[in-house]
Structure formats: structure tokens, C-alpha cells
Image (cartoon, rainbow, N blue to C red; front, side, top):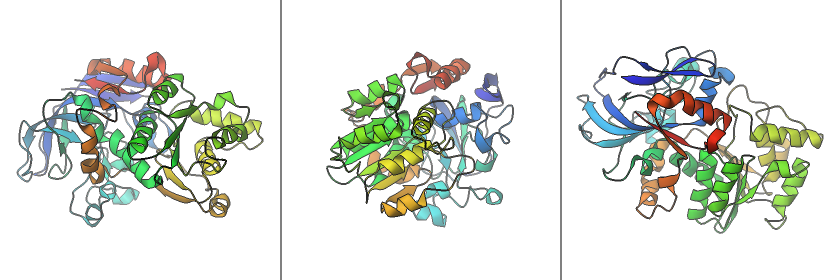
Length: 389
């Protein structure tokens, strides 16, 4: 089969590799019909943070997939060849203590005890299991008795593929943000996760969504969906940005703030925020600027939801400020299957979340090197890319 393989920093290649086969009785083989390109893939592409030592030439990338079941093991009773499924990015058994508690992202069956990490992930580096990824013609799905989400035939892949990561990640971000009825939520970073979090928050009753980013295409997309957008480059300092947002929140600040940035794989919002902080005499290390802004921005008694993926060694939290402001904070890897039933009602034909045209690019899998390049550079308006084998 053909698959996207990592070959070195900023170097991916579409190669012919062996087809996957059933290895365990709980496996399934899925023929991939669409696969997404995610910011986390860029962290591997860039050899970013602590994952760099683990990714090696030939590793198959990707963790967002929809496709058709081709074959199942003997202990996968609820799937059959021909079923259309979305594959969650994490691999979970469904029966361990963590899965039973609604935390499949912490599955005790598939995690790597020596690394003290959560569930195994598709297309990630060593600490998360080194399971071959989804940017390929076929995907072996372990624990298929629990993980795959069956979806109906008919609508295009775009309707359902985001159930693999973007939709449940954004849903959990909003859930953890605990936006009060008719409240205000600010979202830092308007990439696919942040953009979708704004859409979900508004659909679930938020009166006002505020988005912060520096990429014109992202700002324009969010603005069209009713989001009040702010570009840090329009302000001399972070304090000015916070004051401007304050005028839209009765001077209190947003009730909830979602950090959808985390540790970026490339230059972007964090660098702009760091420059703004330097101008105000409060520079912070790269990788913490968005979190610092979130803490400064949220109103007293509000809630922070850290949805961005933080890698590397985390610096100390601003605990004194968090305590003084009586801020609650939640974070954690997305528990995909916990939220999928709730999300499904938003994937009706009227498409309230705009998933049908959420992708900016649809490309053949063979163009993966080009896809990674324009996504990394933000060229050609690339915000969300789907590839088709």
C-alpha cells in the first residue's frame, strides 16, 4: 500500500509499504477513504520538543481517518466488512477502569507503563505506542471491538471525518470551559481546534465568542461564523489587547478562556504574543505565552480550558495569579468516544457546525509532501487539509 512516511526534519515521502494484517483477535483492517493533516503532525514533521528522539525514518504518520472496514478479528462482534467507520486518534479497550470511568484517552490496556503516558495513539512517536498512522491506504485498528465509530453511508467523508479528533477535541474544550448560559468565551488560536470550539460554543448557548489569532485566513473564517476576532499585531502590548477584549466583556474579562494553542510547531500566535509581552516588559518563554495570556484574560472566578497540546518540559504555572483570581482550570487529552454520541446530532443535513466545507484543501495522498509544506507555512490559505488515498 501507499503511505506517508517520515524521513527527517521537514521531509515526508509517500512510499510503498507492506499492507497491514490482522495481528490480534481484536484488530480490524480499515480501507482509508480520507485522512486529515493536524498540527500535531507538524510537530513530528518539525522534529519538535520531546518527540524528536522517538520518530524515525519510515514511520507512518497521521491519526485522523474515516474509511470502510475490510476485515475483522474474531473478537470484533459489532463490525463487519463494508461498515463505514471513523477511527478515534487514541486506542482504547473500553473495559479497563479508565475506560469505564469515561476516560478512554487514559486506557490502561494500551498505554505504555514505562513511559507513564496515556492510551496509545495512531501515528505518534515512541512514548505513545509507535502505532503506524492513518495517512495510508489501509490502517490496522487495534481494540476495534470498542474504538471505531460507525457512521452512515451517503454523506461525503467531510461530514464525519472530524469525529476522529477535531470535533471531540473542540467539544471537550468547550465542556471543560464550563461557559455559563449566555456567557462569553474567548478562544486563543483559531486553527481547526479553536475554530471548531467557537462554533460549538455558540451552538451550545454561548452569547459571545471571541477569537484571537494572527493568521488573516483564520480570522476571516471565524468572523464569518459570528466570532469577534482580535489580532495581537494590532496592539502595542498584551495589556492593550486585554483591555480591548475587556470592552466586549463589561470590563470583567471572558467567563471562560480556551487555550487552543499549546506548544505550536511553527511560528505563529505564540511568537506574536511573546513580542507583545516583551514590549510590556513581561517576556515569557516560548510555549507559555498563550497560557499566560489566558490567565491574564479570564475574569475572576472564571474557567480555563487548556485544549492545546503542550509538549516538552512545562514551566511552572502562574499559581499565585490563578489562586488570587479564583480561576478553575481543566485540561487533558481528548476522550473521543465519550463525546461522539453528543456530537452526532450536530452532524445532520442542516450542518450547523459547517463541517461540510470546513476543509480548505482536498488533496490526493500522493501530494502529502506538498500538503505538509503549505500547512507548515500557512501558504495558499491552508487551515485544514484532508488527503484521499
